[in-house]
Length: 192
Ligand code: GRF
Picture 1: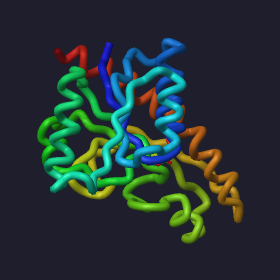
Picture 2: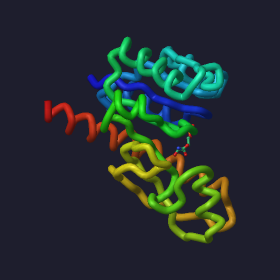
Picture 3: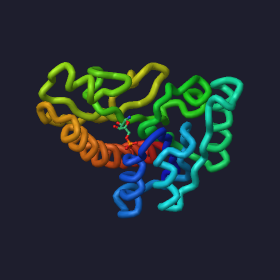
Picture 4: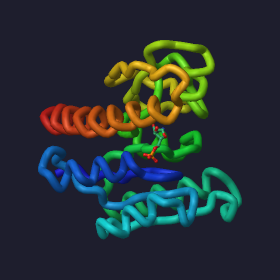
């Protein structure tokens, strides 16, 4: 059973999809903790519903990014967390976390990277008038959505309808993330 932490800043629909996949038995993992940098974000409500512990930290209340991340690392180590799963965590991961969890941090991004990295990827794609966009799961490095790609899926844009496009993307995200995590955890556990 792989012990994971989910990091989220907002709604947390990907967290919920992961937790539901675990409860269905489709993902052999346990969410030991949800970490949020936005106290009171909706992901906290979702985590409470599932009885998953949450750590809410306001980065501004720390003297530096390193101090903020050291606190996170201490929380993760005390729970023996093996993997960090970013799901709408709107912050660049710094050296402290990258060093503590080298090659064990993954992210999901709502575009076919390397197209449209950064904020509002769906808006960027629609602005450019692309007909097909998608979802990418990738390892996290120090850059903005730049780490090695693990899995991708294409999603057709619904012309002039952001809401419908977003809905399609989220649906694909929820499926792709849980499937990819399961494959990744199994592959890694066979190496040990
Ligand atoms: C998702 O689109 C994810 O790809 C991006 O942020 C969004 C988070 O959505 N990184 P949610 O909070 O999981 O609903």
